[in-house]
Image (cartoon, rainbow, N blue to C red):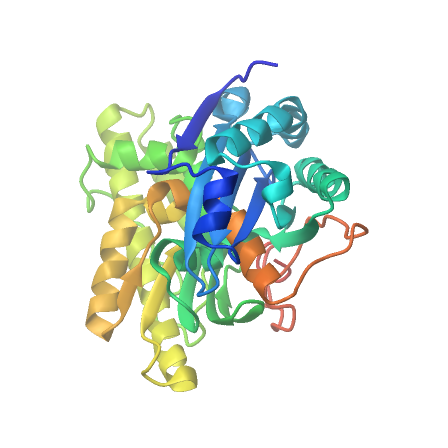
Length: 386
């Protein structure tokens, strides 16, 4: 079936054949990864060397933006149907690009949560079928852990480090102590940052996806024309809140009806500035806590997730890291948004530690990285449980 929508492909410098791979590094692990947790259908093949270095052999991502654009957000039923229609072809394309056969693989990894359950089931069932037919290990990957570990694939950075996770419905600060060991320091008590961008874009008629739309509009505006709040500044615990900021944008917009392009641009510029100030303040506090718990030997700030692509926010975080003596790490944009290379890499990291899963593993819409974290009073569905 032909693919509809936008397809992004990562082409490696070299696409070694199965024979070449085995001759070059007999003990390296090859993992096929599948990602279907939301509105991207993706497959990728990643190689992990015995010394822990990673290499992307192929990465194919099909976006569904056009299918959902008219609704102003992702429709779960449409997303799941789109995954079913194209996942097999995308897997075949990723395998061709990597130049390997299924019998050369060591494992197949799939995002098993958190996310939209219909989409998760498509990826998990497909991965189990491949594992069963080709006698491969199956690895159920936490989507958030895949984002958290991406910097190991791109830069070889190993834990421990401080992580700002800003992906979709999740906004969290965590200490990454090791693969599978996470300590949540802060979370959102209402809307996640990605949701705030999407809702602001919808409110101002900018379309979907909201993050890039708001950033484009803000580039033509000037902050300061409108006064917007900076939520949670100075709080002892590094939690986030964006619902009030979103409401303030609505009030300012309603007071300026009918909206002109200039008003929208200035509102977006001030919204971005408020977000940058709020997140920077929360990260400063998390750095203080991290230094207390880890000492000064692990001074790395990793930012992961689709919202990390925002240039205003990245600039603010770079300044915070520099002031604190931390090194800022942000994966390249194509590995910040949802993709299967990060899933394959997380699967490879877990495989290297002997952490595989049975074919009875069930997909889950909620899957916290730190299940022992104390629930936050007033936290939304993503704050306390995800």
